[in-house]
Image (cartoon, rainbow, N blue to C red; front, side, top):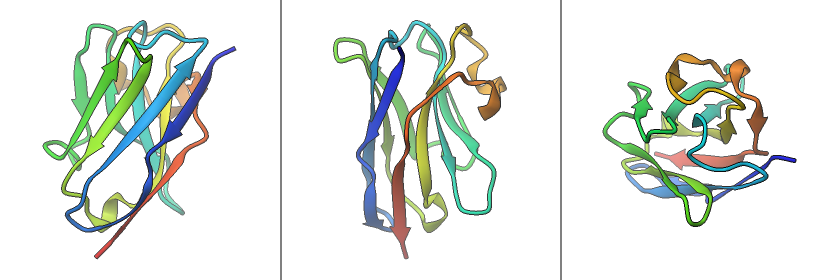
Length: 126
């Protein structure tokens, strides 16, 4: 049984930083596509960043240069380092994993990912 557990969310002021973690069990990090998504109230769930099984990363234009997705294979954990946070980054953040896909990860919408965590809230105040 695949389980993804996010942590690290919180409330910060604009310009601050947070690091989100996603601990996986029943699933090997780096074996397939993984990603971070976010959803603000009233909005659809959107892609933030993805990482392929080969370590290739892709970012949404709105976070490129500020966020970094990475993995720690020894800990079987996915991370999202978020710097220079803005109020518009406020959302529930989810990690997700694909059952089969190993590349082209960002081309798949949220609905295409198979496994999801429960989410962690990020709130950025101005």
